[in-house]
Length: 215
Image (cartoon, rainbow, N blue to C red):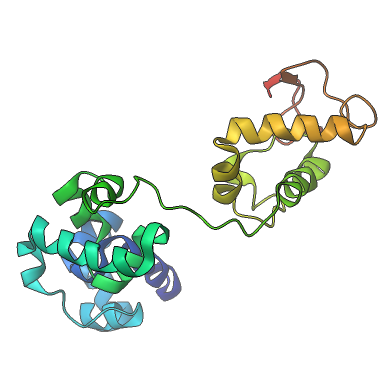
């Protein structure tokens, strides 16, 4: 495995674990041997530094209590209000997302314990029209039902998470797209869907397969 690939794996796990990421946890999550890590980076400390962590995981982190986490949460909630996200909290405190789950069950439960609503209120940077245009951009290329996990790969410019949050669910976003297609006169015209609720063709649209796919 290349140095670049190992570093990318470490970045992903560092985002989840924060400073509490240990060599044991990294090996468990990735299946990589200590020998491979040391060959590529010289030491575990060097790999931690490469992804923006301190050289060693603080051992005291395991002794962090619910009360300590909640106190920091209230401090940051006073600063950020309902806009406080898990990412912001983890970055500011060094506590990992896993530690939060261990102590509170979920990020939403911690928010509630601090007097916030379960989910952060995401500031809407895009209009509904812009979100629908982004879904349409991908649909026009693939002629198939938009898929959450492939939206960006297929040319979407807006995060599928942003789209899903605006419409309440990905299914609702797809239903809104159907209304958008009708308004443009293409739902049953040059880009037809065979019938209400069904889209024919493979997952890649008209590029293979004949099994109907649920819209």
